[in-house]
Length: 424
Image (cartoon, rainbow, N blue to C red; front, side, top):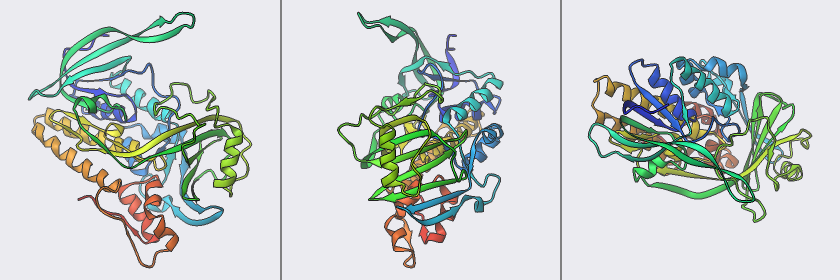
């Protein structure tokens, strides 16, 4: 299907962030939009797996939360261990509100729910469409070049399939939203720098069939200077993530979402059951040796990083395109969903003539300040003199690992004597 010459909004990237932006715009009822993604279909396996309470409230307003809640596993408690010793317990249930829990489920389920909701608004993702170039220099539009991709067999002796450009389109859009992930072409085309903090970390992730007990508790374990997280998943599965040294014999995966279905086993050769048992014994000594089938294992490098600005003019970023975080607290996707909804609301007001286009600069300032504080570029955590010395030593790592943000995080850590820094 050919793309139209001019529309109100083009969204690049059809993950949870891009589709949330599309749905929020579609529900306004007066916005002509399209969403493109160079992949063939939505994600199968991915790192993101949890929705924060505040994110569930947003998805409820968009009409998709009920379906997700029916499929997910509710985390009502967070336990923090020092090796075998249980040091801290936090009750997410005590936060109250409409969603007093963290919801755990595969990212593929989140994307399926958003896709179905978009279909009801007659918005369909244009898969196999790639943004090639953008020019954001116009006063009232962004000029985009989009390629429609196809597949072509290639290779001699060993056959392989390569992507080829079947058609190209040049078009003007009133606004462009870049939700195209950590390698964002939109960010690079806008020539926006991204700055890292503290260097990258390597994380090994394993997913296996099991009967998690307890099923409503997430566990974080600090061992020998590392963080390690255990998640009970729906469908009698569990996921474990370990912070590891970058080893010469461990192949690192590129940080891209697998398109394999989540039930298809996909395992790193180096991260086998033996390696999992070794890591569990040394990092999670409170857990019995895993006995289920290992379904997924991968090692990937993550970093904490932030763009110098979230966009300019009529082209703006949301989600991993703008920021990166370590994966334990699933902050980047959840914050990205908040950003997508906020950005869609602001763009809608501009298109309705209620605000000027330069009002979007406020979005950029607010989100930059939030993430500078969250990642530790600005401000410092305050830990009370009466706080447990063990907590004091690990305060930032604890906050960074919790699957909550903002006021919810403040309320959970306050009994520990931790006060969060506030955005400038």
